[in-house]
Image 1 (tube, rainbow, N blue to C red):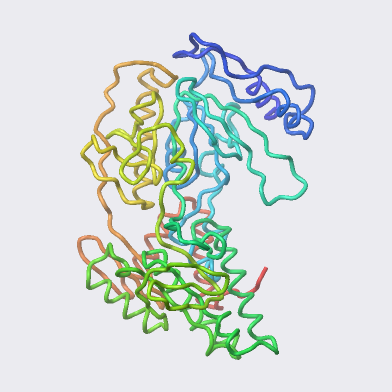
Image 2: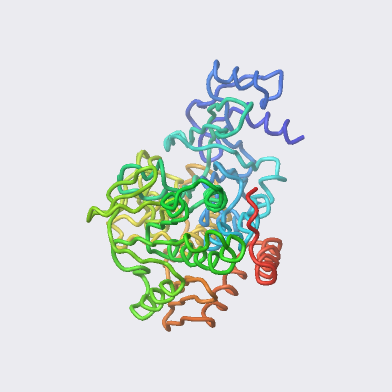
Length: 492
């Protein structure tokens, strides 16, 4: 039934308007006498042109297309009213990552599945509703006039699978929630040799590399110099992610490595490189506390700017060479090449420009939320920081706005109706938290806290923010297991 419903949607032709209007359909019409998921179908599509999800017809639900499954997009899809909208999500991953706990998975404090929330649990309609789908693909272009996007399937890293193919998706409302990408500042070698910490597969790569280096350094025949290089973990970037990963790593070394890899315990160490002050968004007292705790844990703090990254070493601006076995890059984020290519005005910093209601003013029925968006200069508002709480609250706000518009009769494309959108989006910072390992954490929210109490609040707050009860249970059990039995050091 699901396949036949999708096939009907793929071959549907309609005319664009409020619920159908003037203008030819941009979709190629054909009947495929075989499964649209077969290799033959993919080849046929490549020969004949685009397949796609056509415009919604009169009497059907309006379609909201969401690009991305990050904090903003996931929260929007969770709160969107599926009695009035069909939801189509286009993303290269089918889950949301609970990024504040991602660093814990690198060293085995948490299992990877504990921080990955399947989209079907966040919004069940994408797997149950006949007109709602999750599409494993990337958006490559947008046509605001035709209300369509061009997409290409994502199949990289898989053997013996279908070749990527292209298709179109028509939308009534389009929401950009495609996030940002790690900033490399154009430094040579970063992309080739460093590992970022933004996705589950990044954490898996860090874990495998760390454990591999530990095991190789114990093999007879390796030189002292090479052993020290292999076991030197370098973190570039002193923001919350870099500090939390350094804290987790130092705690892993103190509590697990020195017990289970006693032959190399004196060789492994961590260096954190930051151009300015670590945790610059926190107050001076908390920054000093974090510095002291990291130093006590054995983390070497270096102030400097990376100029070049080579396969086994990086070079700082003062000429110092820093050999490494594991290099983790955490220097913030910036707009992706896809966002830069979009034909919309940009905010300061190169994000998609939006107004006070998170609309893209130059395109009807288009919105942008999360790290890929920023207020236009004409709004008089500052661009908000790339934080999870900003993205989540924007997703919640926009879901309520779209629900209000739909109930007022403006859910379909090009429906010019006079609807009071209500108050503009206003962001109020709820505070910042970061853990520095060894049951110590920092909290900055009006009052400043540090130490065990703050660590307990940090864990409690994040446990309640995990999306599903299933993953809350996983996280709690993982924490308890680690406390009682230590971290799992299996390299799987």
